[in-house]
View 1 (spheres, helix red, strand yellow):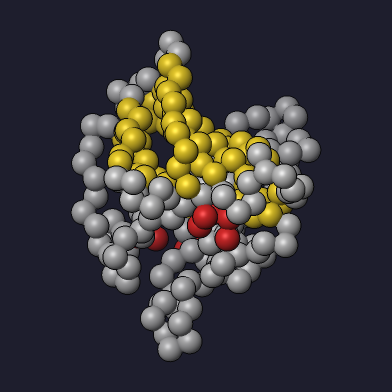
View 2 (cartoon, rainbow, N blue to C red; view 1 turned 90 degrees about the vertical axis):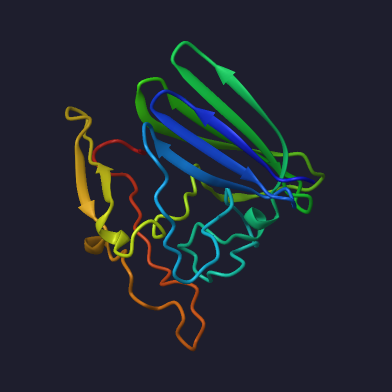
Length: 215
């Protein structure tokens, strides 16, 4: 199939989803407007694309990054292929729905991407449906996978901040901000070593912060 780019754009944000010639889907760009894409600074890779959605099924594991903590590199995510897409428009939002299918497991995954007029914010969710003839046990499903964070700057780990909610029953919208090196996310030089590591497998996860049962 010919490759195509699906664009979702508001006054404040532009989102591009790339469908390659094999039908694989990637989040190509998330750009606040007005703005220009950063000049790529690839050091070790020809591109920074990762699957639009990652799925882990019971017994499937990950294809390359052998870690139970890793949410990327799943077998199912690498097999997902584009089926169709649609756009819902409301008064101040637009939502793009991209439907992907795994021909082996029968999983049909839909990525839902929403942009808002006047705010450079992307809301991402995902849903999964079993359209095959066998039972599926889903252990992980990503809402957003964004690659290329390390390609726009030689010292990319100083370009980002991670804000984590720390809400309580009487104090909502409480945020804690971290720089990436303090979380162990920076350039540790592991790629390119003789033992052929693809990455550090480092991760930072948050679960059940504050007084709410889930966040």
